[in-house]
Amino acid sequence: MRPIIAPILISTVIAASPLHADFTPPIREVITYGQGAELVQISAPQLSDIAREAWDTEFLPSSYFSAFALSKSGGYGYAITTNSRSAARGIAMTECLAHNDQCRVIAEILPTGFVEPSDNAATVTVEIAGYLDELSRESPFRAAAISADGAYSLVWGHSSRAEAEQAAMRDCESFRRQPASPDAPSWPCVLLPGAK
Image (cartoon, rainbow, N blue to C red; front, side):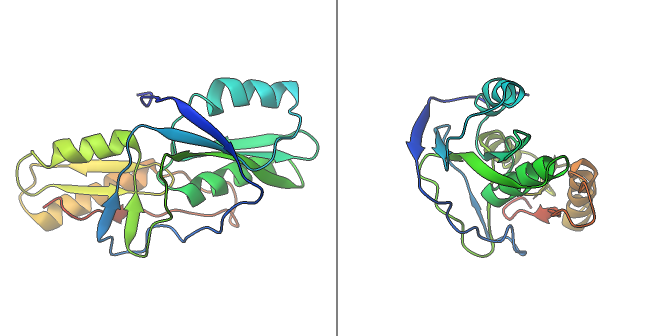
């Protein structure tokens, strides 16, 4: 399912902000944002034709949290619609470095009004926020798990809370992005609060 796209505001910054570590369990707060997104260009180098096509057709139409990395030789990597800023950056860099020597993040798409989350907080995409709202109306013994890389699972109708949590974690882990190399970042699934 493609995310709903709201108009993207464009801004330019000089340097990237420091990143917060992703999703430190136990998660006590889930931060959701509206549909508005902002393209933050960290730099604006000339893109090769193939990188321009990926930028125009894949990256720009995506929602938050997304990032685009570029190498000096014109190679690129990107991540679209993950659950965190640092996961988007990490995936874009991993994709770029898989085929290039030096890469840097040149742009990211963040939710309008984005603030780095505190410890024990998790951010989610617009799509997942909607699913969480629907889940709150389902039968008891429900659970939700997410990974910063965009994987998620929502389950309900189990015979116990523990069973629901195990099912959500197992399902989420099966959709997690597998690291491209042993040195690549990995974003494990975590349980979200509020689904009981």
